[in-house]
Length: 490
Image (cartoon, rainbow, N blue to C red):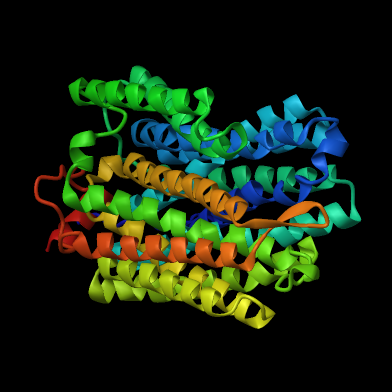
């Protein structure tokens, strides 16, 4: 019997560093998404553009990320996950360099759209972990990868605020450029290319149709508060989204190799997981939005703490650290009770965190405690969602399926941003001639997010049992995915 060839020290080092390298890519992606937030108040002055135009530096990233995540996930399944992951990190790095070199608002918006490609980093990385790791290591690795989203967001805000306060704002993008280049190099060196492929031709019409429908939907959601929810532009965008996505669904069902396997999505375990992802994304995002505004509100409001942007970021930092620390616990709960129970527990914990926020939003320690409880619940929920997907879909479709799941979270976050803004605007009163949200408005926003979290909990409990779904196609015999699926079905 042939003995396996001995591995070199370099190969063993790459194997050990693969998970940390993938996790660092997820953190960097989340940092990239948040670093522009402290700049928004000053960008009109720095670029000579209006505040409405400047807001597109955030909107462009949201739109491109939503469109590219399922597209790049499908490309990863077909052409190689490491290859597409490296390309996504490369686009993010190019965008950072463009931001570092220019103060033109048009260039900045285009660069931020390029950076949106990094939203696919987490689903691609999770799919690589499924292909390469044995089942006993996969749960904790996937949980860690899911936690990087919160960790990076918690690190990005105070880091960017410090740079903006003490250095030229371009320095921040030079820093992310250097980190991005290091991430591309480390990924190519340490991460193995998955042997699994989904054969067929890439569905270009499906990609274009999904892009058009999502742009109409998310543009209407993100700009509704500015343009007016009853305006012709917003209503036209929503109508266009309905028509385009309906035609897209019809095209996907008739295509032999669709961009998104809608028949797979209709299975209760997959479909309900996507519903839970949308609701969890809504509930989670309200925490960051409302906390930042609440603690920065002037003391004259009677509830505000008047904190600086740096101090605000530090208030959110404990939540990011908690997400990192609790990711192993999430994996253990999923292993013992199943990921749907972990998801339900996480959603319930998010609701408890908002209950604390409603009870007391005046004392800093209670604000930090409530935000940290929400972050802890998010860790459990976000780490359980990809595990549910991995246990249900064929091994050759994990990247695209996880991409759709991340897309649903993104849509939930966009809707959360619009809903929270509408609640706070409706419950505002003038202070020094400037409308400021009332404490009651913040509490209503917390109640809304908590209610949605309870709905996510109900959706999680409605997911059928944690066994593998019958009828899923198996990976080729002898591959890591085939061995893993056999063990999961045992």
